Length: 181
Image (cartoon, rainbow, N blue to C red; front, side):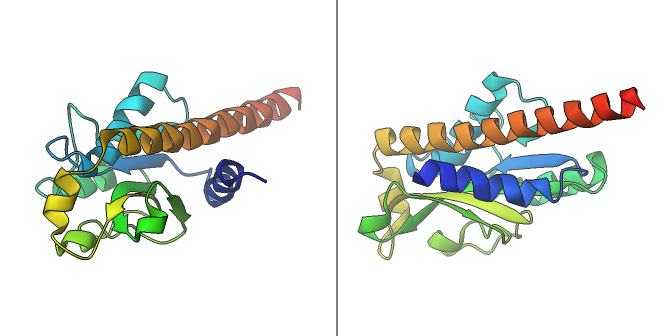
């Protein structure tokens, strides 16, 4: 099975158990740093795809970043009833992991790679390793290849779009069963 299929199944299974809740994807980062633009790029791509079952926050035009993260999380808790939040962010890692996407069932810890202490986001997260970490992280993020970030942004958006389609089919089937009774 291909990696993208495994990631899709993993994300779908995480969400499937929480499909009765409102699903909110928080795409974290800024367009002022190539390496840190992964989240807002994913959000912008998803915004253009007009998802039916998943809400998206954090785009190139309206990013979610260190300065507004806390207020965004407060707004989510005020706007959505019992939301299931998925964090999306760039990460730094080993050279062999650059370009890899990770789906995890734990909260996202944004800013860890650059030594920031920010609130945790969500119940699960998706990260893309955009470059090598361990030394001069801000410089490394500024000098990350846009092509690497764009490829991962498109893959992550594809995963989320496929889960949205799955949820739409599931909800449509549930409505059809309820209507036939």
